[in-house]
Amino acid sequence: MRIGIPKETFIEEKRVALAPAGVDLLVKSGHTVFIETGAGVGSHFTDEHYIKVGATIVYTPEEVFQRSEIIVKIAPLSEEESEYLQENQIIFSFLHLAVSKKNIVQRLLDKKITAVTYELIEKNDELPVLQSMSEIAGQLAVQMGARALGSGSEVSRGVLLGGITGVAPAAVVILGAGVVGLNAARAALGVGAHVIVLDNDLRRLRRIENLLSKSITTVVANPYTIARGVRYADLFVGAIQIKTGKSPHIVSEDMIKSMKSGAVVVDVSIDQGGCIETSRPTTISEPTFIEHNVIHFCVPNIPSLVPRTASYGLTNASIDYILNIADNGFSNAVMGDAGLSKGVCTYNGFCSNEVIAETFNLEFRRLHVFSTN
Image 1 (cartoon, one colour):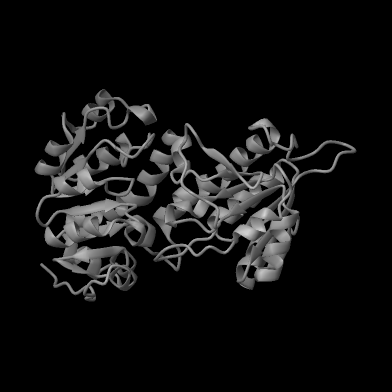
Image 2: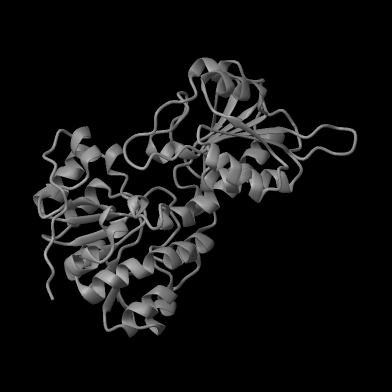
């Protein structure tokens, strides 16, 4: 099959959908890969790196879309990119359609696009492609929060996350004990912070407690404990993951008002709309804003801060799914992999994800494919 990799256009996005190693696997399996010139530069992959593994360099995004049967991206589709889509194409990306614009979703339907969104692909009750980015986001949430807590702005508390002898460490409160929460807790614990993790799932709390040798405090999340945790935190990390749909505002504006002056919140859920009422998306170059004397870090593409690591991680997690469809065809691939089928949001002109259909008042049809063998 013909596979296209456009250069990402999302603001300050430096990741590339496939590292050269992934392209090499596709080419050696007999597929043709088109990549837009400069697509890998942000991750320090040159056009020459891709040429050496057999890719064909093209010079406009239109050409990538026009020549490809499968499009592989990272960021959600922009309106301009959605116009480039060709009839019956397959697209892989973190699409986040539930918080997208309706006209983009409608264009996917009108052009009969098969849209496979990475954040919904499942394997063994986990989200393997999303997990690769969540591991990065969890670690970076603590690193960026620590920087803001130190001296990032005029209201910063000037606090060292791990403290020193005779001086107490900062309190890091993490809402969510999933992959982001685990990696945030590990990072905070590693520098000596006092770490508290809240979740309403006791199994997750036990898991994170066992993995970190009970060196953290775990608390069952409910409105009372969340409000108390927010008020106590020097650094608060919102690490809620909703499989489909928009993230609910679990932390209210009144809770934010109760925080210490100069405290920091990092809303990792911002790519789904945010789990903190006062959050709004920020950028890598201007990552923070101040609301009620609380510093907010709300960058939706946090892993782009370490684009090379992120590009390798995404390639490792996604390449088997891309190869499966390229080698076997879409129908055979999803019939043999129920977890992959859960990532399919639009197919043959219909919405195959119930939450997205309800969000935009669209007709919902369950994914139904036939073997082409």
